[in-house]
Image (cartoon, rainbow, N blue to C red; front, top):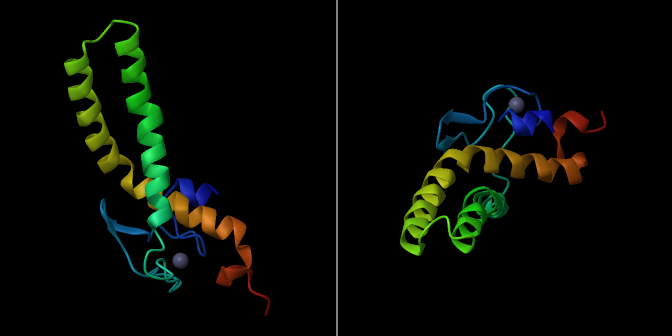
Length: 116
Ligand SMILES: [Zn+2]
């Protein structure tokens, strides 16, 4: 789980998940683990991304609107900007967390855990 939170390869722990901020490597350069197991594998990462953005940005803005602190238009602008910025900032973490979640529940698929 620590490897998922730190954007590390779930198999070897190398810092090889991302080449740059938004560019995920296809395989681990250290152990050769293929990160995207099949087409659409990272669709689940969108769930993490959406949930975190909703919880951290949209819900607080809605609360400020309903309590009268912000006007509707101000809240709308803040919510859109926060959602766009949040999606950009959380993108690598959501993919890493999705990879971590997959191997947390299907632990036998991880080569490091395979029986010799
Ligand atoms: Zn690796």
